[in-house]
Length: 89
View (tube, rainbow, N blue to C red):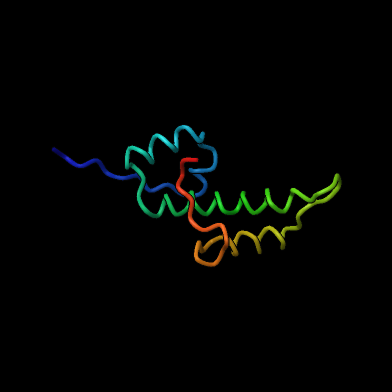
């Protein structure tokens, strides 16, 4: 039996996808490790944004520099409290 090729998706390909579609691909083992790492990074990034936005009031905004800092800070799962989360919640 021929082994299926695992997909390698970029951030640009991942972000417009529906969560259900990503979950199906992940549970079927069709995503490569790099893609799973990108999905985990996006999860850490948006979790951090959500945590920080919890104290926000109307009119608060993130600056580009703040978002870039959060993006870099969440890139490595060992450097954050959040760590790596599976793509399925």
